[in-house]
Amino acid sequence: MIEDKTNTSHHSNQLDRALDAGRKFATDEETDLVCIYFKTGWVHEGDHTGRPEEFVLVERDAVLSAMRAHRGSHPYLTDWLAWLEEIDVAEEEAREEALDSEGVGSAFSSPVGLQAFARASFPAIGAQPSRHMVEYFGTSRGRPWRTIEFFETRLGIDTKTDRPEVLFWRFDTRNDVPIVSLRRYWGHDGQADEKDIARRRFHAYLERIESVLQGDQRLLGGLVQGRRSARSSTYREQELVVLMMGVGEGLNAPAAVARQLASITRAIDASLASEPIP
Image (cartoon, rainbow, N blue to C red; front, side, top):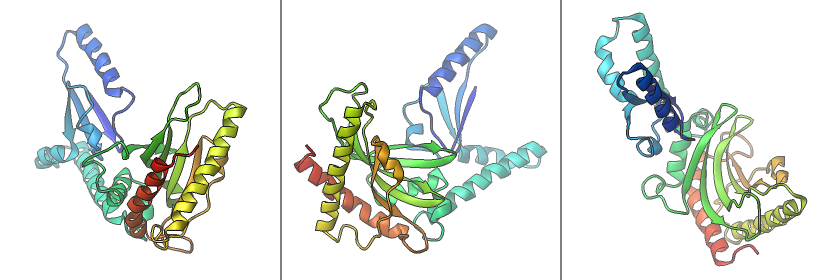
């Protein structure tokens, strides 16, 4: 049994469900079961851990090394190898363009490019994760996104979800323009009183963060802040800071954004930790 994941990682107990189905089939057919987790694109740190031990991870490079000697033996195999090699080239280009003003648009359309930008912004991610640096990733309408949470607190009120309130950076695109946005999320249950609480806390966070940034102009380092999305009015996920990247008026050089994000994060985190939002 082969589970093939391209440009994503296993999640939501996918491999466990596949294993259960495979075991049932093997029992019914009275045969052995061999489980392969084949990564045709973008190997994430989570691919090396957190999967059932029955699944053996096989990466694209290993397959290419083993199968290139058989190129030309069959048209299907030849085409398949060419496709895997195209992925190799595309991923390398995305890594190289992640900090390039002209190439960042295509880089952000790839999870590899988003990962490269996140690593440049927060080098400690992946090496020594801490409670202040928790990564998530996924896709929305076919476009990849990546988030890094750095501040978490509980509101101390009774909600149906009891989810923590978090601040996080999100890397994705808006109208095909790469953006980095600082967001706040609280999964309240949508009741009017909780919306009112969320609205008031949103403005309290916004005031605090703007105070931090204005208090030390070096934090922004000349970066231009973009307009926040109207989606902030939902009061579940709200944008506090938006930095748009690329070439053109109102857009920031991605390398400059990457240089400043860690400093901005530390300053905001320190302010909120020392004096929590009431």
